[in-house]
Image 1 (cartoon, rainbow, N blue to C red):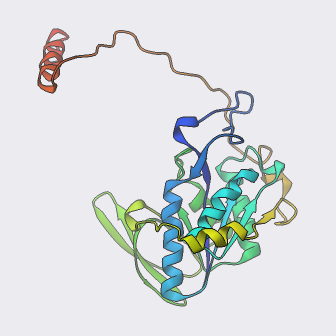
Image 2: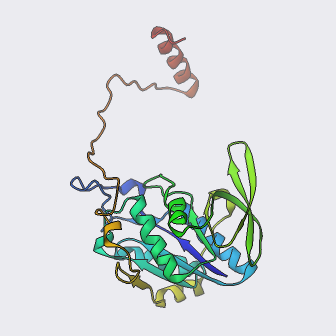
Image 3: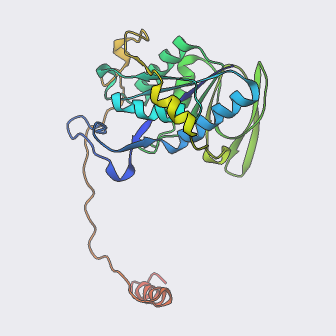
Length: 260
């Protein structure tokens, strides 16, 4: 079983910075973490490997510093890692990112591709499904439980607003997972030692034979045209005292405004 997990290194939410000229996130030199939803994707890949056998390869697209995230994935138990890093990839929107990931996945080959449902820096939830479209394979989003897996098919529960759907798909397939699926394991001491010495493959545009017109800013149909900080609204009030006193003060204020 060939399992690929796509992960993203995202800026710590308290350290988000944006390039005013390009409208893209500044990632170099900014404290970063593995996208939280992708941690559940890594755990899902390892769990499938333990159930059905095979190999887990983790891939990520980003600057050289993203190698840290891949080593963290190896310390958890992943077998191999690939970093897609090329100046030509910079500024990719979700379309260009999905295209680039799909070219790398085609080169590696996979039965199951797993992504977190979305990244906390963009919150689009588009990359997983778009990657599946580029690969021309089925995808199942918001997976909350993997019920069964065989050599040729997989059956999962997909989270819905009021319950869940049971969905079965042939392989290869791409899954996007939610946090309810599992609890990511902690890396072992041995895993950390293996990760420290692991060789991280680094591929650029030529290595995956990507069309230069479909990558980076040049290949991104959507681009940020303007960035601004919202104006601070005036007239805010802070109520002091105990919770009960604050609630009473709020009620009185709403009555003055004729909202009650």
